[in-house]
Length: 273
Ligand code: CA
Image (cartoon, rainbow, N blue to C red; front, side, top):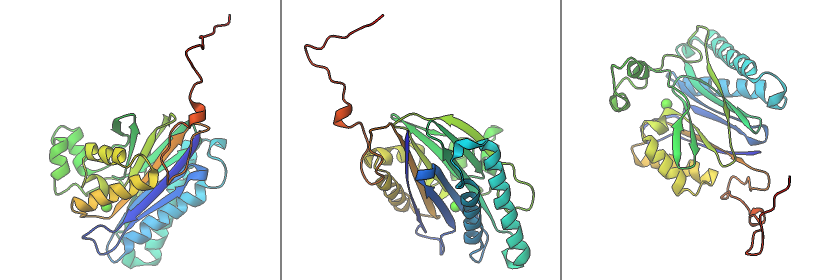
């Protein structure tokens, strides 16, 4: 299977800086979004350090060669260490941190690792499924039955994350493996997307974009800005295509004419023992 990807990050309409960073290396099946936090541009530093640590640790060999969950864990520990070092060297960076969501695919499999409230969604057919559970204060309350999902989406504490890189302590990422199918589309995003757009709206924009990956990203960023653009907005769109399908991130994908089964009125199904 061929993996294609595109990404877009935007400052939004209210924030003075863009503190998000993203990674799109489709030929290696490696994608990530990091959402930095901390004043005086420190958030930008933290998210950039995390993305660079992931790139360095995971872009070496083809992903299938070693145990992927342990490689992901190592990459994330390295990112955490680099951010802690930076804070030690520049005390004005104290308090900086970042969320992180990483997707790595070897074709039929995709591993998702995340820390904090940056998300991964799967669009399969006409359904959208959130794959990651936010490590956030409001999501903890939802899990305990103390808030509904609707209340959580409006709660003023919705930006408070319970896990982040750079918080000083050891970080425990959540890592899951998924089987992917041709035609699956995955989104990685920072919370500036999903706090502005409900899941159904995200799905509608994907479908309106004709699934062309660059248009999916541009459409989602535009929709989040139209809904207020209260935070930085980052989206990575990933698609899996069968051999013979187009993997052009700028064009629509689908079976080519040559792949249509050749069946006419005089074609009889054959069976062999
Ligand atoms: Ca954010």
